[in-house]
Image 1: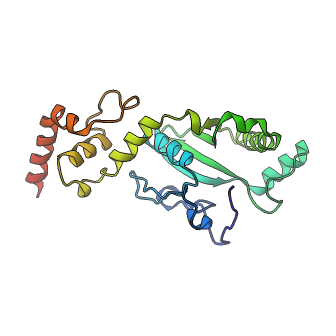
Image 2: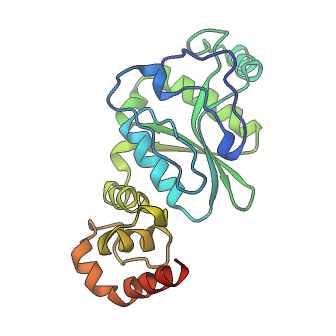
Length: 224
């Protein structure tokens, strides 16, 4: 699925300056692509499927996460060496780098790598297994922990709750009590129970957290 129409001057960069190897614009009107904004650094993120959007939000929400680099390129010389070593045909061709779905840098400095598939049924494809093997071999050599995840097994409830509240991470987006509530959740000043098991009931939570919302209003009014 991943088209390889990279521009020669595309670079990776670091942190908020990172530019992935594959951009959403490379896919034209593909409806499953999305460009959320990383609420921690303001960078436009390039996600190529709904599954990637789900996993990215879940990883970004984790307080241990420092940076996430999507569509991260692997050094061509290393993947070619691994292909030759194990007698595997290089993905796409011998001039196009492989990519990893997500390279996650933890606040501890440790690196975790995530490869995403729609379901475990994809592992029945021998070619898919070969490419996963190459990817895992590279990251094993690089001393990074490799993780395989499946869209069908991701927490869709938690993803939807995260996606809705982080739209109001910036106080500038706040305009009413519900958006204040979402802002307070997004900035972790309050954390409702069961966020991972039930869609948040915002009118109910506004009543539950009325004191926190009114305190936020008072503080904001004082600063203006």
